[in-house]
Image (cartoon, rainbow, N blue to C red; front, side):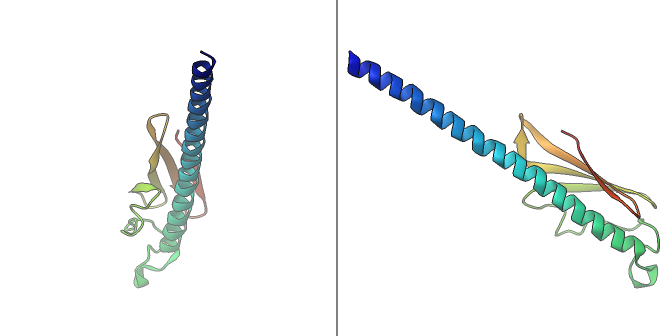
Length: 123
């Protein structure tokens, strides 16, 4: 009887340990994905601002974002995928993460102006 009780207690402790480790790695993956989305959006903001400042005569925007698109190599990364809405003085980029947080994808938004890149965590 004591052996059975020890086996049951051992299984309970083992199950708790496995659950704890699983949650730890899941939290780390979500945190890493949030940081990756932020980094990707910052990079896209810098690329967009360079386009804005470049003269139209050398394939730039000539002080306008109109004509800028997300470069194809950056529209989908290991961190997620990105969609842009472009106007002459502002770009909004939505980044949808590759990890789930609470059953929902991680979503970040970048607001890009000629002088600023602002990242907003949507969830």
